[in-house]
Amino acid sequence: HDPSKLGQKFVNEPALWKQTEDMVRQVLKDSRINYVEVPNEAAFYGPKIDVQVWSVIGREFTLATNQVDFSQPRNFGLTYRDRDNTDKTPLCIHRAPLGTHERFIGFLIEHYAGNFPLWLAPEQVRVLTIGDDDALVNYAKSIVTELRAHMVRAEGDFGTDKINGKIQRAEEAKVHTMLVIGPRDMQAGAVSVRVHGQGNLGAKPKAEVMAGVLHSIRERLP
Image (tube, rainbow, N blue to C red; front, side):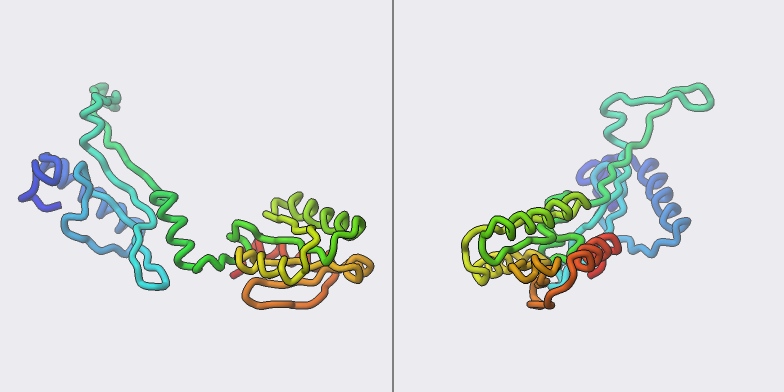
């Protein structure tokens, strides 16, 4: 904070400013965290620690913040009984490990340009059928059910549209993994795998694909 702006931009408590700023510095030093002090970036009620990140296009975001507040507890008349049996006014810590959730989501969307890795994608897998034959659709639905049982965010497109149209919709929605199923896949107990931005990866046994999807999500692979 700028001492010349006490009572204007910052709460006019010189002793508390010195005490809490020293506390924050010591915490960072004890935690062996590299930090930079930026003048006049404190909150009006006390010092804060901001975690800054930069997106792929160079835009700066505050990813997380921890703020020491020695003003509001006094305004609300908050006290606690200390070890010496006297009433003391506590410090309040405003903690936002993800900042505002909307801003954090906005950062992720911009950082990945909407092309989220499998573990982070809003829709992780979409199962697409070539046709709407009952047996084929039932096979596809069983795959969606199995994926969802493992907490995979999976959807299905089982309509009568041509497969190229279904793939195009999934690509436009930036669905990470598409499992295309035709009669031959069903008969072989397989699925044809497509990955957004990579194209067709070929037919593989269903169990192998399932295991690969779960492993990628569990390990948070890129």
